[in-house]
Amino acid sequence: MRLGVDELAALARGAAVLGTGGGGDPHIGRLLAQQAVREYGPVEMVAVDDLPDDACVLPVAMMGAPTVMVEKLPSADQISVAVQTLARYVGKTPTHIACIEAGGVNSTVPVIAAAQLGLPLVDGDGMGRAFPELQMVLPTLAGIEATPMSIVDEKGNRGVFDTIDNPWAERLARSATVDMGCSAIVSLYAMTGSEIRRAFVSGTLSQCLAIGHAIERAQQLHSDPVAAVVDQLGGRLLHVGKVVDVQRRTTTGFARGDAAIDGLDASLGRLMALHFQNEHLVAEIDGTAVATTPDLIIVLDTESGEPITTEALRYGHRVSVLAAPADERWHSPEGIELVGPRYFGYDLDPIRALETV
View 1: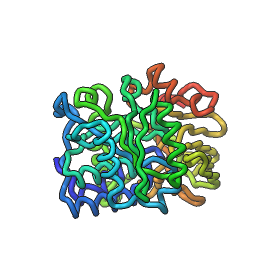
View 2 (view 1 turned 120 degrees about the horizontal axis):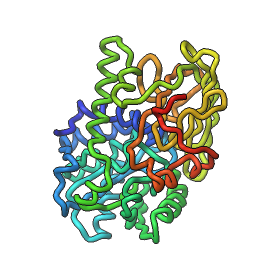
View 3 (view 1 turned 180 degrees about the horizontal axis):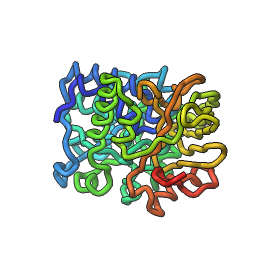
């Protein structure tokens, strides 16, 4: 299929749901992608299974703190420059563009690159959700190296890292991103078509479109958009309430914080706490954890079903908090070591989305 201007609102909305609070502002991403598609034309979306084995696939993403991205937009050519910089370094001509994560702005940044460069976009991503650090992708579990990777800021500064392992790619790129103003464009995890089939989550962008359209249909029919998202994800509703406190800080290139949600309706009398680092990582009810990373913890506006990012969460929001299962590879021992609660400093074993509270 081809992604035109009309499809991008649903794509961005669905990606913000899968982004679990992170991945950047979906509204900003949609506007940038719509501008690129109007200028360069629709983008062809290609299934993972249809990629040639020898395809040269270059993922591209925005790196940094989502709170900064709200006010600091990438320049018009910054995104394609990141791809071109990496292509020159590795000495290959890219055949496809890809998303490394399904997050608000990071589902649409690759659309911009694909439109600008006239390349097809892979219908998949590297994790099936969003995570805050570069090494936190399924390609890492598959033994694929993050580097060489390019990094570009809005002023035109460009760099390439070639590191000893993927955690070092995160460490060095994070420091550079902070110096670049806490947001930058990166292109990394260059892969062949056969590597993409082994390491990617297939059909992610199609799923984003389905989620976005489901929310839009529910709004038009005045039905329950939250229930529509639960059905699309095979997840469950954890809590309904009003945001009564948000503590948020931008440190070391991340948006870190906590939110408290006082229960309403069926959740009356219960208090939920959410803990996040760009993305929601742990959900607790009355002090007991009920869902954790690597599964998805999603915050929606209760009335409209619109996803709410961690940087947009505010006092007074009426919200519904959902949990949904992650790609099963994340629940392997290696996956838990990479993105489980203990990695982020929580003394918890993972709690899966569909376990009974």
